[in-house]
Length: 470
Image (tube, rainbow, N blue to C red):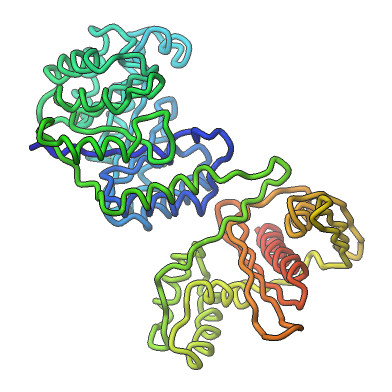
C-alpha cells in the first residue's frame, strides 16, 4: 500500500471565514496542533516582511517536532531562496516551494510573461532553491486550465532544475473526479516514480475530497489539505476516506485519527473566532502549556522556557529572570509557564517610563458601549484620548493606542488574583509584539482595569525605550 503524504495549507491560505487574520501566537499554536496530528508537511507561507515573517518561520521551526516545514520562494526575487533558507535552516526538515502559473490567462496577467519566459523563470527559481535545499517543490498553479503540452514542458524544466516534488493545482475546482483521474494518470506517466506527485483541488463544486481520492487512484503521492476551512480539500475528510477505503485505494496515511476531531475543532476555533470590527485586539486565552520548572532547573532551562514563550532574553535579563525565578522556586515545588511569564514581565528589561498615567475614566455597562477617557504624560505634557471599545479593557487599550499613534499586536492578556478577600489585588500581564519581538508588561491593582492599563503602559515603555536606543 502507498503512504499518501498530507501537506496542510491552513497557515498559507486566506481564512475561508474571511473575518480575521491569525496573529503570531495563533499561527504557532496552529502549527503545533497540525504537528500533533502528524501531517507530513506544514506550509508556512512566504516571507513578505523579512523581519517578522522570518521570526515566525523560525518560531514554527522550533515548535514543530515531526512535520516538514514548507515555505514559498518568490520567483521574482533572486535573494528570496537565501532568505527562506536563513529562516528554515534550524528546522528538523524543510522544503522550498516555487509557485508559477502554467495556464495562458494566468501567465499573461499574473506573471506578465510569454510561455518561453515562464519556462526560464521556472528553471531559475527551482535551481536557486536547489542550492539551499534538497527538498524542492514546483507547484504548477492553474494546471488543469493550461495546455497539457506546455504543462509537460514546465514539469520537464522543473525536474531538470532539481525539483523532487511536482504539484498540480485545480485552482477552479471545475473538474469532475473522473476527469481528475484522467489528467493525473497522464501526468503520473510523465513524472518519474522517484519524484513525489502532489495534487491540490479547490472545492468550488464540493467535490474536492472525491477528486483527491480519484487522484490517489491515478497515482498521486501527496494531497494538499486545509484543516481550517473548506475551499481546499478538508484534512479530516480525506483522512476519513483513506481510513475507511484505503484498501480500495491501496493507500494509507500516517495522520492520527484518534485525536482528529478534537484537534480539528480547536483549529476551527482559532480560525473562525469572531472579533468586532471596532477593535483590532484579539483577547484569545492562551492555554497553559504542560511545562513546569523546579528549583533544580538551571539558568539554561529557564532561558529555554522563556524562549518557548517567545522571548529572546539578553544575558543581563536572563540573569535577572533566573534570580527572580529561583527566589520563587524555593517556596513552591513547581513554577508554570504563566508564572514565568509574570516573572519576565516584572524582572526583564526594566526601563525608565516614557509614558506615565495621569488618570483615566472608564464607563461600562450592559446598556451602553464601553468608553475610556485616558490621560497620559510624556515629557511633562499631558496627552489625552477618548475611545469606544468592546469592553472597558478594549476601550482603554484603544485610547492608549490613539495617543501613541500606532497599533501593537496583543499577543496575550492574563489576569490573576495575588491576594484574597474583598480588597484582593489583581495582577495583569500584557504581552505586545512589535517588529516581530515580544515585550511584556505587568500591572498590579485592586482594580482589574487599572492593572491592565498599567501592564499595557509598562510594555509600551519597553518598546519605546528599545526603539529610541536603536
